[in-house]
Length: 453
Image (tube, rainbow, N blue to C red; front, side):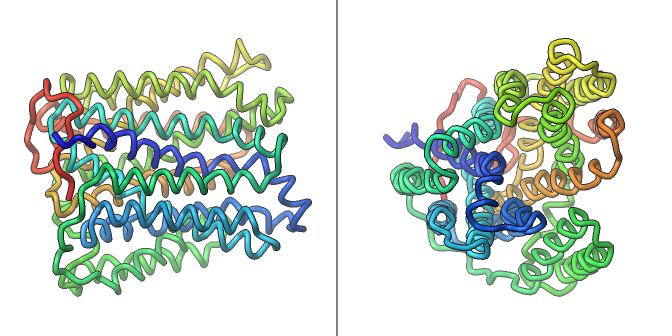
């Protein structure tokens, strides 16, 4: 084992933490940003949307680029771009500059996020090791989401909203240094050319679809679906080296996991976003107090994600996703009947939902990338990340139209039922923890990465 191997898992976890943190840390700072830069109410939403749209739209492209150019190169390049965009956002003199910087931040995150999954999938090949790595990676995202509101409130209050972005600069510099220290040099990239037509139609289609659903623009939704249809034809019939190789969709387990991640993202946002609104709009909590109110659920998510990682090689993905889906369904159903008090009507159901998320998310991410050839690890990670992120964005927009917290949570419970039924499509135990090439690995191997391409 290389002497720097112990850095690999902390590195990918730190990268995932930063990606999720930046999706939430800015929310508390929005009123200050609006006052200082003169945003209109509709324009202010772009501070959030610009990041989320480029993040979701470019992740599949980022995953394919990691396979062609190398994981270390894409991870370090993504972090560097993210940090530079954060510097531009923190120093932005106008609203337009800030929105543009946020879009570039999302692009940087879209390059590095699939690269972290590719590193896990190729570095941790033993069953137990790979499951624990995915558990730690998932938990890091949970901590990032939990820390977002608290860190955003603290930085905005103590210093300025600009430090919500500027704090990423030293963090990014440290992560770039860690990437070059922990990951070996990339071997020469594959001799395939990037599928430019597929990249353009796929990225534009995803962005248009998500934006259209978020804004309720039917024409934009139709344009997005049309572009995705063209993308499918290009990948199936035209591209010599497709950006999304159809062989990744031919295996039932990973394909089912990707589809379930789309649904899961829609359900998970029901907890983190709508329970925050419930605390603020119904119980009268401040944004910071609402963040503290969600902290027990976030902590439980981290703990359960670790347990799921330990249990995955023993029980397999089907059992864990089924149990997690039952928790999601019961928790959201309970939350739909919540009373006016935090302890009586909010804490219990959010803990139950968080336990379900902790069981489902790392399990589906592991199942979506299990047994993928090493040369497709980045693309598989990009596809799984895209499904989860697109599900969150589309789910947020659709759930917001349902009307009333009780109906929102009933709809989320319904998604939990669908996930429970769909869990039968996942494998029972065979290859449950398999990494690259589908090997079962040795459960006693621990977190011992191998050389990463």
